[in-house]
Image: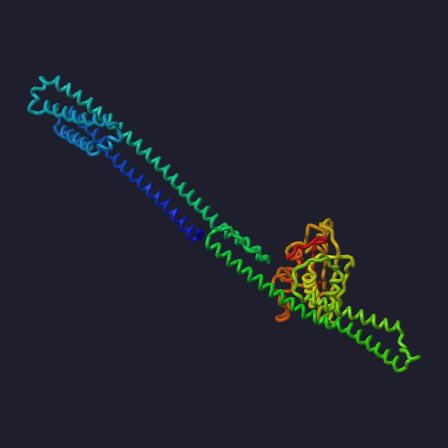
Length: 519
């Protein structure tokens, strides 16, 4: 089945064209409306001119009746002709403005008026003035008919002019409302299209931004964006590929740091193996000498070897062999690449074993002491949590190297009900990501050194990858970053408290009596 994937560009182009079409449509409608208004205004001017012409007709009519001047008659006749011409040339507009019967009546009255004026002018011609007495009644009758007809023309023209002005005013008001409505409609259309584009375009980008924040916090979670847009799909695939590469490279970096830690362990193991091997060698030599002397001076043909002494020597050999085996086993467990597996681990023996690994690199005049209850246990992956403890102890030893100093490791079980009362004590860690708190009982482990401390500006970046305060070539900047990752992997948290000249304390909080998630 054909799977069509639209693109953001197509959506934006579609929105742009939709807005342009709406604007063109409203512009065309406004243009036609303005043309209609223009025609109405032009016709309104014709109506006004027609009305003014009728007024002039009546004015010269009155003058003619008063003074009987031929010039007034000619002016009157000219304005009558002009009125009839305006009516005929705008007959469609007049018909649209008033009933056809009224327009026809106006036309007839203009014709009748002109005819009456001609008759009246014939009676008042200069050659017929001597007959005025004979035609007085006729003249008076015509004058009355002319006045009535003229008044009817004025009345109809005035009514049409008033109707036209009202029509134009109503049209202007309607046009104003249409213009306001068009602007509102256009604004709403633009907002609606913008909202649709926002949901279709901006929302997936916001989701990507949100996923990027998660990645920035160090959690390489696969991006899942519900979008059919080609650009978003390509960007999501590219980011997921980048995440896989970053996760792979991070594993390589962790493995490199682990190998570096393994070098430290080998130095400590060499130092630790030297003692049991020396004891084994000494016990073996003593036993061999006793056997040799017993052969050279036999008593009654039998070997003179004290069984209790032999048993003691063999026991020492066995104990020291087990000790060496345990040291080698611990080294192999640390170096072997294994899946994350939780188990109950005694904290004291875990730190004792870790400290034994670093004895070979312990600076002179430096002591490492522990204050950990024997029955305190954590549920963790031994290899991963031991790597975290090893990195912390190595950092503490590096901090006190040179001038001598002490490293103290303490651990205790802490109740969630008591943590609220400790906000002013050693648990008030505000210098890095707020307080290290968990809403449950915890096992609190502190690694304190009496070194020079950490500057305040470095505390905010102390757990960032590749950040180090050591000289170039003496640190990769991954040790504390890996510690932070391992502790979070165990559903715990870590914080640091340090002031220049007062040493440094790292606090690790792990859930107590609770299984951590598998990875």
